[in-house]
Length: 153
Image 1 (cartoon, rainbow, N blue to C red):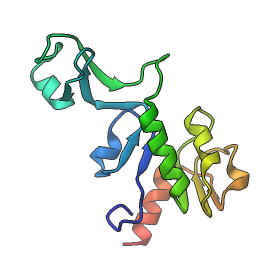
Image 2: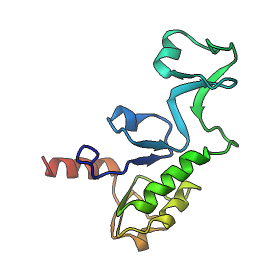
Image 3: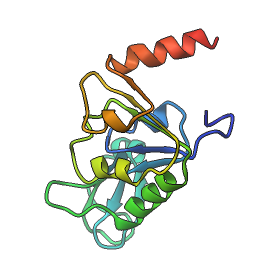
Image 4: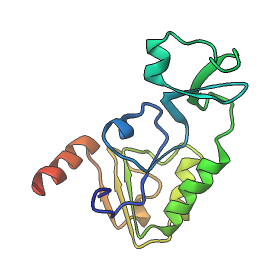
């Protein structure tokens, strides 16, 4: 969808960086990513590969501690990321929710901001938004996506 310019992007709570690894480009990682690190003082950024290769613990620029670019328990989400994600949802005509219980806040509440015509939910179990969706599939997300991809090949 992204290659066909039919996607506004991906919004995820996952920190594993798998969306980027899969080739997605326009990703809002609400809880950050383990693929990026930054200095807690000067905010200099480092890639995970650079940190691992150089066994980096301290910022090369100012000498302060570096940390993964993720939201830890008790920390606030980056409001700029939250508003960017909400803007995408509010301007989308279709919202596809994959593998989410839609229970964990604040991202679960994002679905109520969707004003488009087509809400699609693919999740193993029922969600609180199933009754508002145009299409609901209760199955393993990976199996469903593989079937869709294979049927379009």
